Length: 210
Image (cartoon, rainbow, N blue to C red; front, side):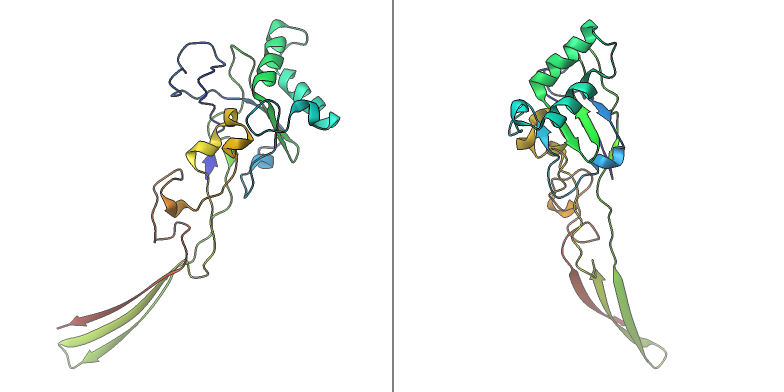
């Protein structure tokens, strides 16, 4: 499933006064292939002042350079907007993984990483059913069946809504598909049995027809 890096912080970047309730999405800027931020079992590494992030001064020099360059790249060099981009970078930090770099937009702007820009992990599920019917004369029959949901007991994971907010830093587990869709907290409609990431379920049934 696709997901959006949805910044809902009350320290709003856009400056319109609409985000103090955390109800509006502020997008960040992204450089690199979108596939680099496919969510996985671990949060995407964060650098800067964000909660739980590696302090910017402690990050490798290459990471510091990548974050700074990516933060100012969308704007005219030396412009006020470029300076505001560095200010928001200092406030929130940046994320770097596999050639992809996510940085906060300059104050007063929106970023280019729009709605459903990234993808979650692949989802695979196999259900299986087998049955046998016995007929007794013309009017009577019996059917026995066995149903298997998630036959191979595969763990499928998805993102919870809270881990798609980059303003929360590493402490918010940004970009981590750490939960299965059946637990009731992931994006979408949770379903505990029928092919939504839960463990293998088996049911048996006997039906008499007369």
